[in-house]
Structure formats: structure tokens, C-alpha cells
Image (cartoon, rainbow over all chains, first blue to last red; front, top):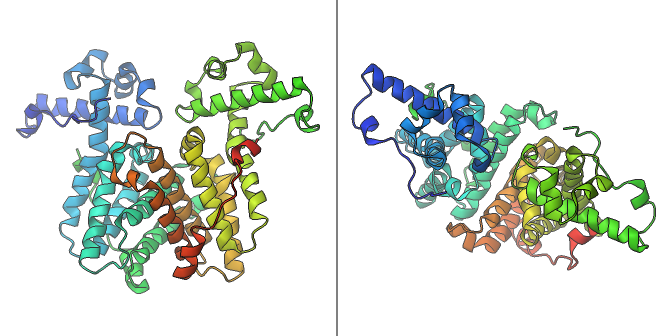
Length: 233
Length: 233
């Protein structure tokens, strides 16, 4: 797979708002294809997914695929971009309004956990790709590292090992999402899922060096209501 | 998949040591099939692996498969048992000689990280199944929870939330293994892999409530030299 050139939205789609009926329909079809592909790629390796699987899942004709993507590789890259970078950009837009790096991290983590609960395919895809080269180098991990770095620079965080903190907090986030995804699991953790997620955020903030009372408060900071994934695309 | 009855070694294999040439050969063939299956299941969903793939990978005839396993489901269960429980039992045999729960956890985590480095297929399989129902309920996660529980009961650990500690430490272990597996990754963490693993163990012990100097010391406690995976089967 050529991972160097993610298939970002093409010029004709992004240069003008999709006002015409045709352009809106085209965007909707592209989104259907991306969602179908994400559902498939979240369960199978790319090599075991066919273009036919993708168009059937999207309920569009086989030929329609090529109006939007050149190849399976191209849609795989687009799904990665859609799933990671695009979501990360929307989260960043929310973080821009926040000054405290600890509140930034709490907000970003809680938005991620919430999104994974609302969009199971996205959560499953995130878990599957989290430790891939793409998952480590784009999307959420480098943003987490950036926010940890900021907190250390400002003296807000006491733990100075950015790589370790990114690993521990990032991997635990993946773990929280994974447990939440085990729908038919009878594991006791599942029933305490929400609580465990919240306890995890609190713990992550303490790990970074926040005093207990601040970690407790920031772990339940209000989130924006809007549906991020709609805006993420 | 029927997950209730893992295909443990059958009576005729386990009731007597395999002294005869025939029994030894049979055991070797079974091990070849299991290793081939693990390599395949670590990269693909079980539904996308065929019995023919498994026998080809093991370099044995197709029919030989049925001398050892009834079905693909049966070998999948056997691989899960082999990969998780069987390894966990060998680790437990080492922990039996250790009294301090903190040293137990450090030893178990370091043995796991070392094993994943020595046996890439095993590591990949562990990452893939770590958060599955089987991964959560058998193998390493419940053993980690047990050792954390022991440390809390003895007053050795200060952090009393077993589920959260198991999640954070278990998921970070999976993260460490994942990063080590990204062979062609150019991510900077990869170059510091050994160091990061060690820093993680130290951090995990501090998270449980150990003083810094003890965590530093226990993170580099000597490991047994013997090859665990040979004995694990």
C-alpha cells in the first residue's frame, strides 16, 4: 500500500461548497462508500476486502466506486484520513477554545471515548489501526503527545517522559474502547464500562502530575453536544 | 465458534511422556500445525484462514490435520489455549518462587515483553486477541489482576482500583508489544524500544504505589534464562 499520499477530498469537492443537488449527492455517495469501507476494514485486513464488498455495503453500483476512488488502496488511505486526521482536526477545533493543557487532554480523551461508543465501526477501526505506522504518526497519538508536551513546558505536568506518557495514556484509551466494543462479553468490566472510562481519565490526569481534586474535576468537564463525526467529513 | 471447550492436549498425549519415536513425531507435528495456525490467525480473522493454509504452512499433508484436530474451530481454540493459558502457566511457575507481589508483576510483564520480542507471531496474536473475550478472561489479564489484588491485600500497593490498574498496565503492555512489532516503522519510539519497555515497567510499579527507588530496582530484576515457549507446550 502506498501510504505517502492519502486521498484527501479532491479539488472539485473542496474548492466550492456543495450547493448543487448533484454535488450533494456525490458527497453523500462518497460518504456511503467510506462508511462501508470503514465497517469492512475494521473487521478484515485490506487484502481480504473487495471493491464489490464495499459497493454492496454502500448499496451503490460497482462502477460508481470509480467515480470516487481510483483503487482499493485509494479508499483505504481515504478511510485512514477520514478516521484519524479528520477526526483529530475536529477535536483540535474544540481544544482551541481551551487554555489549560490538562483540560485539553481530558476533553480530547472523552470526545474520543464518546465517539467510539456512538460509532462502533469507527471505534473498531481505531483499535485495529491504533498501533500501525499510520495510527502512530497521524491522528490522535501525535496530538496527545503535543498536548502532553505543552503541559510539561508550562509546568502544569510533572511527569516529563512524553513518549512513555503518550504510550500509557494512548494504549489505555485503546483498551477502554476495546472493552466497550466487546458487546457479547460477560466480563465484569463491561458493566462498569462508563465508570471505568471516567476513572481512567482521572487516573491519566493524576499520572501526568495533577493534584487529586483537579483530576477529579477535569475528568467530568462538560463536552460539546454536537455530533463530531458529521463535521469530521 | 464454540469457545467453551478449548482443545487441550488429548489424553493419549498427556497421560504418558512421549518417549516413543511415534509419540515424539506426533507431538512435533501437532506443534508445527499450532505454530502455522498461530502465524495465520495472528494476521487474519479465523474465517479467512483455511485448513489448507494451515497444513501448507506446517509443511504436512492436508489429511494429517485430522489426526490432530477435528476442525478449524478446534485448532483455533487450541491456539488460544497454547498462546494464553499455557504461557500463563509457565510464567506462574516462575512467580511461585517469588514472594513480593511487585516483583511478581515486574517479572511477569518482562517475561511477556521478552517473549513477544523472541516470538513475533505470538506477540502479534497476543495483540490481536488481547481485548477479545478469551484474552480478557484467560491467560495474562486475570493473572495480572490476581497479582495486583495480592499486592493490595498485603498493603504493598496503594492504588486500590484493580480493574483500572489491570486495564492501564495490561493495555500499556499490549502497546509496548505493538510498537516493537512495527518492524518497518520509522517512528522514533521504535529506536528507544527497549528503554521504553523498561521505563514502562518502572512506571507501572510506581502507579501501583511503590516508592521510586524500589520501582527502579524491580524494573531490572534478573529474568530466568530458559526459553519459556518451549516449555509452554
